[in-house]
Picture 1 (cartoon, helix red, strand yellow):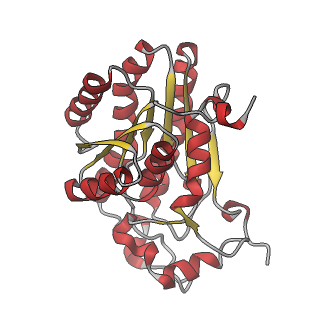
Picture 2 (spheres, helix red, strand yellow):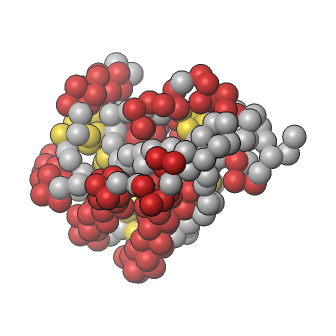
Length: 272
């Protein structure tokens, strides 16, 4: 089979939550650049407008929906709008997520008392779990009937290496939320395989995005995390695009319940 057939997403009706920036935008871009019809969903109207304009400038078919992924009724309304506009939904990127703050060690490898587990705020737990785990559950719930009706489809979740790797520099609540995401997608993949619905995940390591107020866009933070990678650099959102296209395309038709770790060897440890 030729590459253009294996990775053909032309005309695929695609939804990306958290699509106005970061990894979500990168997923939307690679889909749109390869002929998919993409709807960006995000809580940020101005960000949506800017992202859509950039994609449309390259000739893409792009639409937007303002969505708060912690509120099921707004996700449901947005999906209904996409289905009404295009007649079906085929690919869903459940990408939206937020930071849980830095970990219990700081960049000097000293313990930060404010990040000790006994001092983590309960409202932070509630926010992170609602956005990172609860929204994935809601998105899968709402997407599933559309994909069943369509005879199958793809759900691609943005998880993290934190689902598998204990972290000292990443917030405890974030790690717990992504561990929940990992098990949720496996459970969903097992249940939905009979309906020709594949549920898989991107699992990035530290990546330069706007998450956490954009703290990883700071050069000092990038330099620090580069020292923790065997390839001596952090990821950029472009590094996610190959795996995103693979998981959304026919190339992954017999792959489900899996994470593709995209971390430059971060989870392996230091080499030199």
